[in-house]
Length: 247
Ligand code: SAH
Image 1 (tube, rainbow, N blue to C red):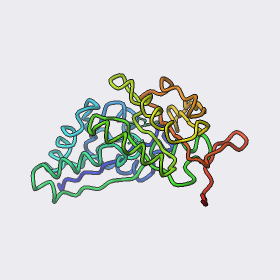
Image 2: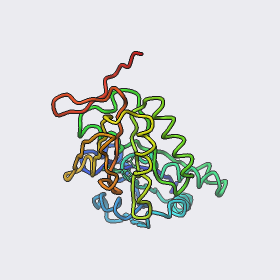
Image 3: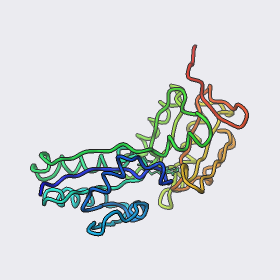
Image 4: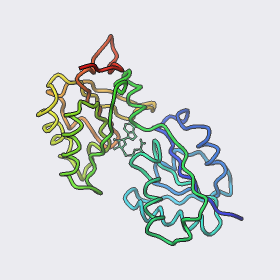
């Protein structure tokens, strides 16, 4: 038996937002590797499938484990939430390949795209990502806060719509407030700010406000924050960013 490894994303929550290609990859796998709550989103697809649930913070260990299983001949699916390439396991797999057993470079490794939180969140409110946008993770587990601040400032100065992943967690309660304070020094106070919790799931919740009034405590680990560009605006009950921006 020849081993393989596919990295998949479950989408933001609703089963319908998991792609058919991802479902097929999951059904073909002998082993599923991932953070427990993401594995729980995957229905039991075959009786002979092994599940290897692990803690959220041990991504590199999980990646090495998955690669070792594939090298031993198993058909492994590594499961992320959303899209597996956006702040998730696909990059962890390649980091492990880069620093690991040279044999891993010859493995059959593939990535399936998924619906990332930013897209599901945007769809909940209209089309806030209709113009140029960028995505920044506020997690400083793997990068310095100074780097995050530099990127926030540059994105604000360039008038991008900014999608903020990992806005808050119990271990990091202050980052989002600091990010808003920095953005207020560049962007207009009336700039739309959207907090979308559990986007693309049955219990999604949207809080729409402005940069002046945005309260960082609204966000938690399941929230995606979108900060508009100067053109982002409301029409009826929707928020959108026009496609063009002429200066
Ligand atoms: N790979 C994931 C992102 C992992 S980073 C993806 O593509 O969506 C984890 C962060 O993603 C969370 O802190 C939150 O900011 C965001 N997130 C993930 N799922 C979400 C959802 N359903 N609704 C809102 N934000 C979500």
